[in-house]
Length: 202
Image (tube, rainbow, N blue to C red; front, side):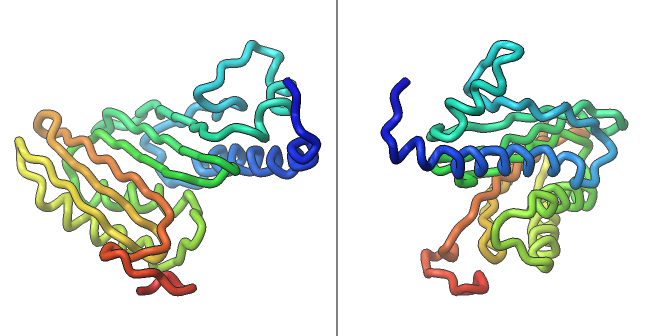
């Protein structure tokens, strides 16, 4: 593998961004207050890469700085009744910039509980531009959407709070379980396309 001098010179900074992203994902599983599950250890190497045991350091040195897209997909182990599945996918793109956090939760239908857990999960991610009031805004929006879910139906919606844009989807699996998914990205525009100011307001 041959790299231009400029790429070799940038490798250290790009590698540091990759490590910071990995550390962020690892810290997130402990920051999120969700004792109903146990999270696996976050692997050193993200998808779609597969590395033989013992090759992690070489991969980090050679490949980590120059990836265009990668993700960590985590699947927790439920340890409490009422929780069937909890998955999360962190996605990053070119320049190691954050792309999306998707949380997928299958549990008994309890709007207040689900809104609380999902809003805490987004808060624990500490995404760029996050403000303290964002959790209340997201919590209230999730409660409203979850309250509209009827057996056999699906509810979808979009919500912006500050610089965070969340897409929500909830559907019944079988009574009394629902699957709820929230995908959160960073945005610079409101839902109607207007640019946001430095405080995340339109």
